[in-house]
Image (cartoon, rainbow, N blue to C red; front, side, top):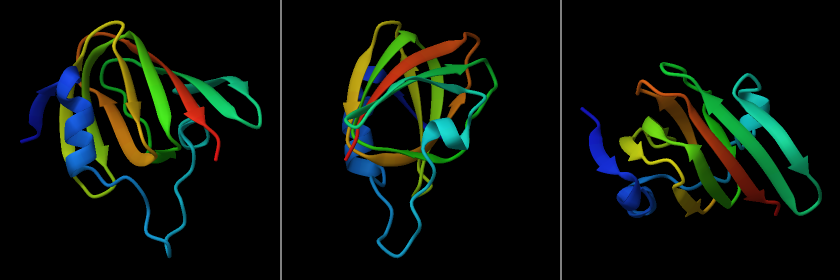
Length: 126
């Protein structure tokens, strides 16, 4: 059964238990908007930044994908299940307006709640 955590602890748990990258011999996974175009929209892209909008309806799940260092603003939060590349699954109750930062990582997000989740993701380009 996944560990239930709150958004304020999400960053700590992800840093201590999640895989933050892909082994050198493995091919990096696709960016979110390419892996799951039905859930991610590109709002802005240039040489320095990629800005995405993620919309997940209840029960929807995106494909496993990678992000560069990112800041995420949850316009509408909800109950999320996050599976990391190393197989860990975390549950997060994310409130509306929550902002988090995370270093580059790979994961899959599932909306396990009753509300639509909307997030704005700002990724630094390497």
